[in-house]
Image (tube, rainbow, N blue to C red; front, side):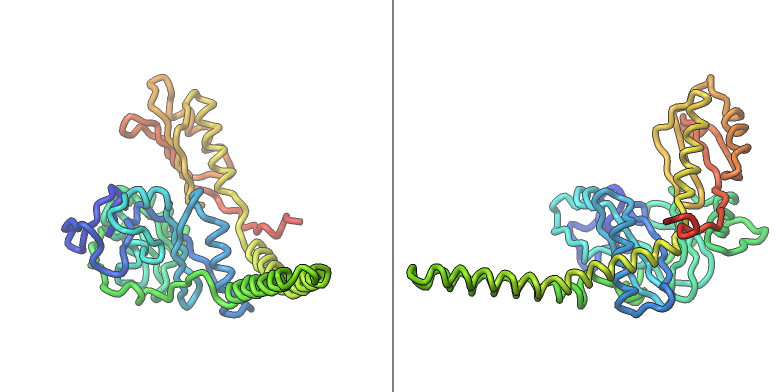
Amino acid sequence: MLREAGDLVDAEAVPLAEPVSPVVLVSRALCRFRFLPTMPGVSAQEAMRAALLHAEGHAPFAAADCAVYRTAAGFELWWWDRARVEALVGGRWRYDPRRLAPESVGYVAREGLRQLQTADGFEAQYLVGNSLRASQWRRRPFDALQWRAFAESAGVDPGGAGPPAPVQVLWRRDVRARGQRVLPGGPWRRVEQAGWAGAALSLAIAMAFGGHAMQHRIRANTDLQWVAAQTEAAAAPAGLAFTDSNIALARAAAARAAPPEHLIAAADVLAAMREVGADPDTWRSDGVRVYAASKSDAAIRTEDIAALLKANPRLRDVAPLREDGAIVVTAAIRPSNASLADGAP
């Protein structure tokens, strides 16, 4: 496993100089997760292309690599920051995203809610069968409020009990048991490759005509134009079909997507902090909760931040506090249950 600090270790946390297995797990601290359910009425090939498009279009990093796993109910999408992970590898061994997998898929699945102690922190998981439906990571164990927020975001009633004690689970030897990993490619990639091969062949034929003899220049130019026209005509239907298919998948996904409520809620939290004089220097949102922090200032009252945010209809469970020399604000997002298609053109 490649840990957050760059250490490469085995299952017993013994340092390694280079990988000793075909698959290298990446610390959960470096990964982001999303579950994408299979859209009804689409074929297996369309579903896989939609998952790859979603992974490419919703990457949480400027330059991201991803791992997509197909399960019975949908797709597990995992991302990591390519530049950061490459820097951690540091040339000690060849970076290959196809060889990397998120730490979470290395653990044996167990249906229901559970809290795992990972290599660099703690992960809350909700599994249905062999499919991971929800996952959140914290550097410290989940408290009661964080655990309830996670369970509710997964659509599960946690009951009155607090978070379960973190458990340590051994890595399994074959991460492929988690689900079938989807790799970029497939029929459309082969169509594109065939198109490029045809264009290259056509160009070679045209060049042969052009160099055959100087006295046949006019005939060679005529043949070259004809070949170019035929190549363009042959490539257009495949290209248009590929584009139209991607647009249809994107529209279908958008019709089922939630509006960016977490971005609006995050903006409200940052605005409230600035109103009382705090200057937020970090924030994040997982779609269920908003987290923001600024340097601590004795002149700023956390009660003033709480008063502003508790009146906000988009937020609930507002909890501003001072922690480790910083003012930290967390709040849960009230879902509107609206879909993007409700107000989209």
